[in-house]
Amino acid sequence: MAQINLEKILKKRSKLLLDFFFRVKGWSILVCFILLGIGCLVSYYTLDSEYSFAHLISGCITALVFLAFLLSILRLFEKNITREELEAVIAYDRSIAYDQLFKNLAIENIKSRYQTDPIEIVCPEVYPKRKTIVYRYFENDSKVFYSQIGYSWLFFGEKSLYYYHSSVNHIYGYVGHENSCEFDYSDIVSISTSTTHVNEVESLVLTLSLVNGETLDIALRTRPNHYYGSTHELSQKEAYLLSTIRNIIRKSK
Image (tube, rainbow, N blue to C red; front, top):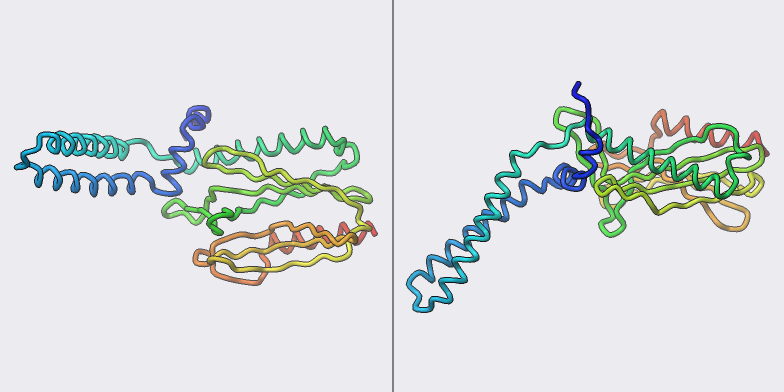
């Protein structure tokens, strides 16, 4: 296996991943074909025009569109991102989010109170404006890759729980939308799960209801219905995660 030059990939990640998730190459060529046709028509109908200015404008438009068309054709021969490279980018982004977690722990003096390793939850996130998720998978490959991921970590102490969440946009490398909270197990009134379906996206959410009336919603599943199919059954991983969280909280009370 060839060695991955991660630094080089990260420098042009936005172009590579926009091409991967949105197929920008194909769309850009289609648009250029359309514009080139329009430019040719304009040039043809102004060919006999008495106005040299109209000739000049139509010629410039046609030349610019033709140049954009040639550049788009050249992009077809550019190397696409491989699965191994994409996985390396995702792992890098996750490490950045994890580093920010422990910086936050140091600032809030949390780590000393939670000696055990946290439970990590990785879940695709819905774009707020589109109310949907952006995903794609490599051909002949069953693994799905998502453009935006939410990473959550749960730390369980003897008497309290600490929650940290970070959103990662893999296309642009943005790591943000951090959210954290800490509360005692005695503050938890109930634990429940709910499944919703919005715009062909199925979401499974774990809700911790607190004594002060507030709730903590933790996304366990976000996935496209038409790829996975809709089901209310818990996967083995989801069932294990819920059982672990419930057992830890019950034993602490």
